Image 1: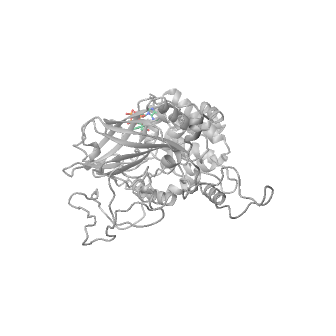
Image 2: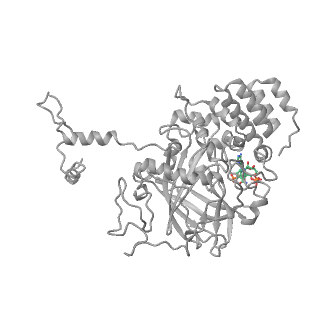
Image 3: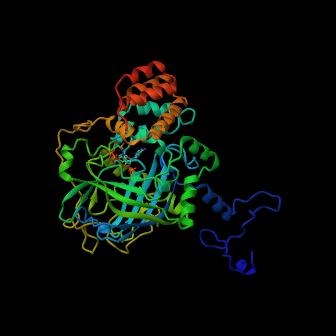
Length: 505
Ligand code: NDP
């Protein structure tokens, strides 16, 4: 180190700012004697060290992210009054966190999994968070099943190992998962990089314009780097080469100024269409076919700077499904409604009740309310009253200007029930369309190979049979027959092949 640099080095201090006694040696009784309990600096250093981890997210643990901006490219004021979308050319700072779902920190990035696509827009009317995925659908449509699903993807209680048997057992007993499993088992389940995948809101949300007119919307962030996937073999080879391949790729691309970008395209459904649309538009296991609701390009997201500190800005980043800004709201999608309470709860569990005061989570505008105290609180508004109503100039809500986004509910008796089915609601129709009309012959070959391999890794025969008979064959008899053949279930291969003739692209 140069003499000049040496002179500029700051002094090591304790966390209280007191000059530290040594970077090297503990306080001992003589050079060979015991370490003394009175070494307060050593105690502080070790105590801090053992508390370095905050609780992990329960899922979506392994991830990475970057900052950037969103730019409006089309006038959307006819559909929403959201201030950050109110002018073509307007830019809003953003944070994006990509992640895998099932693996822990340290897990290989390229393993087959759905990828999280969590967005935070730092708008002038507060933070707008959207917690999407790289798939347009999801495994279930009711939050009651969410913990069970996640448990089935994680580790066995006895061995501590992940289990394909557990995954297929859960999936094949939950037919609404078929659409998502088809995408997961296709090459889209192993994206080449985070830059080469799309992001979807998956859920349906509400937009409301300045006149109070409401629309149902779905967000599609289309990669401008093109969709690129690994084959199963390539993805598995990469886990041996580089566990952090996706995290590294994003960081390096931004560091070399090759800024990744996504075009935001919206599907917009008039409010009145929902009641009688052929599919339940709030069922997250289904898409809205493009020919019914074509996508409309409205903006562009660019990631152009890396975090300076991974823990402070990526690990501690909290994304709250309930963080909507005026002009945007939830829909009757039960998964959105369930996630609106669970995500805030998770952040409070991980970071504490004052998580929103951390720099990465803090909104750009000022916060005023009557919440007070709690662990690690450092924001205060001086001697502001801590109750409402008050006579001392405390903050005041304006219900005339800001109201909860709402929809008409034709309520019946309180009950536990499935959604009322729409005319074409069926768990196998849309995955069947994907197989027959969207996938190329190569996509289908890879899908079959991936499923056969996955079902061959420790899955019991009765679950393999159930997968072929009551899960894959109803999607498409040809798919069932090919998987049966690949698994050596010959009798079933004949049975499924005779179910029906298959329409090809
Ligand atoms: P379209 O032919 O209009 O759209 C099909 C879409 O599928 C494409 O635009 C593309 O969306 C996506 N896609 C293309 N190749 C694959 C693949 N190998 N694996 C997964 N998705 C792929 O038909 P529809 O809108 O009527 O949808 C037909 C089926 O396509 C659906 O049942 C669904 O399975 C799938 N799909 C539909 C989407 C939608 O929002 N309508 C979105 C994604 C998939 P993208 O540009 O988003 O990649």
